[in-house]
Amino acid sequence: MTSATDIKQLLQHHGIQPSVQRVAIAEHVLATDRHPSADQVLQEVQRKLPVVSRATVYNTLKLFVEKGLLRQYQIAEGPTVYDANIERHHHLIDEETGRVIDIPWDAVEVKNVEGLEGFEVDSYMVVLRGRRRDGS
Image: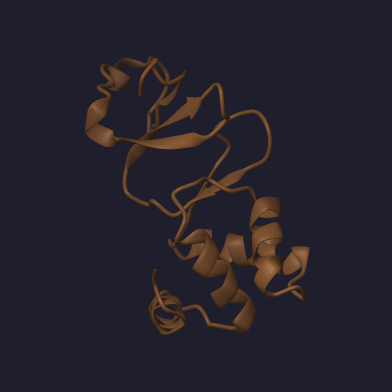
């Protein structure tokens, strides 16, 4: 796990003043492979830092997205989620658990994006849905 000192340096490197609240939020969202909503981040961070407010969490997550530390997605029905994996990748939603799983970019091939008449595609991400096979 990354230390608070490392987190502070990372925040400073991205032009973010590392307050106690921002460090606590970063320690959670940058260490998880899950895709938490802002409310899930709030609940988790309040376990360590009960005084952190909903507004602080929402504003901090927005700042982290603006500074390139997180990506923000509306992957499935429900709230916006945050992803610390800022590399290009796709997602799979496990239909049994609802968990969002990162899928390597090269695992999925998308063709003929240039051929979409009337559109210039800037970026894309594939969202797959499925469930684990028996025995996995």
